[in-house]
Image (tube, rainbow, N blue to C red):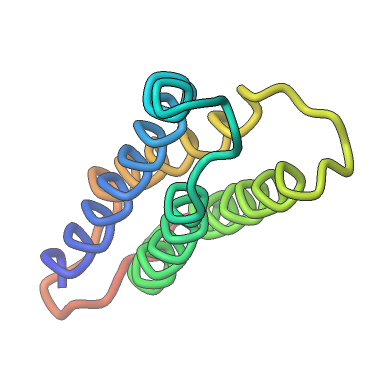
Length: 134
């Protein structure tokens, strides 16, 4: 059971880290590639779609992680940060509320930290059942 927990959390950490790399690299790659190709138009659709790809991947990582965590607050924190990440992505598309470009890093980093925490501190007994501790 511990290997399932670690795999889901490792998957979540990798997904979150790649999401952050994507977010950090976007301005640099966008300017260099797009502007060099003949004008600073919008980013390619496939590049914008990566945001939603990472959101879906993180959903499944969280879904697996919360099934096996022993910490109730981790369950809520993972889902709240995932929802915030989704809201920020939707807000970026429709520009409903003006937010700093750095706003997306808060829930993304929180997801990475929470998956690392869950991976290191979720305690399951030998029968595969998580010990609940509140």
